[in-house]
Length: 393
Image (cartoon, rainbow, N blue to C red; front, side, top):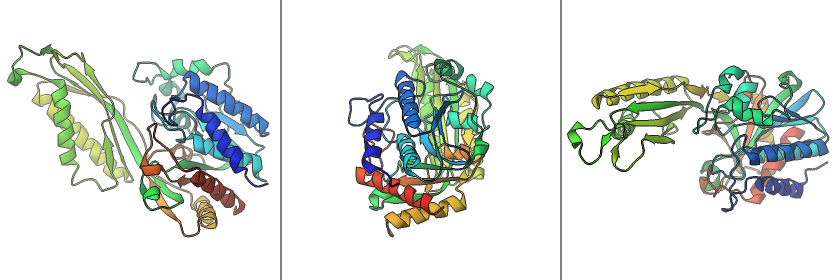
């Protein structure tokens, strides 16, 4: 039976209604929010209608299980605080449509907290064994909520962890979340490898003081320490990184965050990504050394939170060849092999089984934003490429 493109698109748009932002097609569906849990309940019903067995594990990962052995497909359905409608959701709904139409057994998964409200791809990290559950339960979000307390909201739905031995491999379809395919008017990207990531929180402590009476040369301003740090690492990374290396300070908490007070403390996220493990380690050394130097320069202190991260991962050659066949079948010559600069659940699942990934274009390269979008024709092309890839196996 062939895939039903209209049913696939209708389901994507229905999923978008859970946590709809009211701005374009954007969604606000963070892990364990009311919208996230409602979306997972809706997905569980769709899985059951498709003849799959819905199964919530202890951390909220939702599986739709086919008879074993089966190929696992999917992604995640939680979103960033200001997220797009396709990030993750595309892979889940594509997997559901293929499970409905394929002659081979396809299981479907929507992993929990891929977007990192609490950690880095938290749900799949726990399922893969990379993150112990006891350790995960003590992770907190920016508001101080513990992961263990958040997952308790789904306790009435959850069962045991799913045994990964029943799956022969994992395929994840995703939007590119970058500009390459769109800029080159290409329909499909077959992923060669996924970058590694490091993520930790750094805190600078100075001296809180009066903004009107404290002379500039006597200030121990924690925010000024952050600005100096940011400039220095950009300079010191120059001879270490490649054009593909990226680093981001994406979240900043200033204390006491008042207009007439010299900030005494700043807490910020520091994240960096690269395809080379050694380079990631060299960047970490630069970050730690620079932070210590800057904190000492203001007579303050630097504290480092736990290091979170995932190693670079290569895609399975056999699954990749099947995906390349699917891309060539539906987009003759109009596709490419490419690395993923974004992190995905496939990075964790690779510890358990062979993995492969397929990308479709992101309009103007925009993601993690309400403006995230992909032409519906490109979404269907991606679905049909997956269908052709499965026929090749």
